[in-house]
Image (cartoon, rainbow, N blue to C red):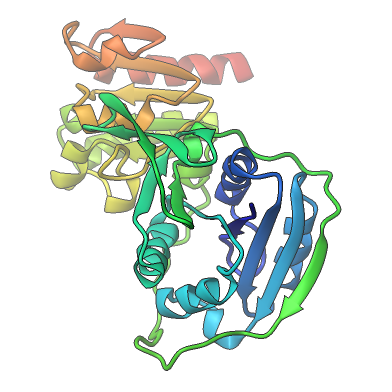
Length: 314
C-alpha cells in the first residue's frame, strides 16, 4: 500500500498543514509519497524531502500549477493515483477544492475531515458539529481523504527522501487564474498561530472590538479571531471567523472574550491546548470547554489583563 500526500504550499515554502497530513498518511501506510506540484517550487520539494517518514517526493513543475487551480491539480493527482491505496489532502480550502474532483474522477467516495486512523480502511471523523464521532470504513480500492490537521501531530523533520521530477499532466483549461487581492497582515495566520485572542458579539461594535481585543493580541503576539456572530454583525472580517463554519484552530492558548459558545464555535476550538474564557454570563456554554474562566465584564477584565502584561514586561 502506498499513500500519496498532496503538499500545500505557496511555491516558496511548505504549509504547516502538510506535516500533519503526512502523520495521518503514515498511520495508513509506511510507504508515503508527497506530491509537490507548482511553479518554481524546487525549495518546497527539498523541504518536503526532509520530513521524517516520507519515502519519495514527486516534483512537478509547470506554470499551470502556479496558483493551485483545482482542475489542473486534480488531473496531476489522477495521473499518479495508479498504485496508490490512499490519497490524502489537508482539510483546508485548497484541499477541499481538489479532493472531491479526484474522488469523482476515480469514482470513489471521499472520506472527509478524519481525526483518527484506526487501520488502513477505518477512520474516525466528527459529525453533528463535533458532538459525535463517526467510525467509517471504506471498501474502495483507493481512499481519497481530507485530514483535519488538528487531529494529528506535525511530522518531524530529519528525513532524507529522494526527489523525482516528472512531467506535468495537464487538461485543457476549464478555469483561468485572473488575479488575487491578498490582505497583508503582520499577525500569525489563524490556523498556524500559537496564541489566538477572539472576540464575540458582546463587544457591541467594530470600534470596541479594536479598542478592547486588539491591544491584548498585540501584547501576546497573537492572531485575532472572532465568533460567527461577531463577523455577521460586521465587527470583524470574514477571514477571522473561528469555528466549523470558519477556521478550525488548535493553538497553545485560546482566549475567548464575550463569546457564548455556539456548537460550531466550540467544535472549532476544542483542540486548543488551553482555553481561557471571559464572559459575564456564568451559564455560557463555552465555560464547559474552558480550562480557566473569568466571570466578569470583558470591558473591565480584558483591559486590566492587558495592563497586567505591560506591567510584567516592564
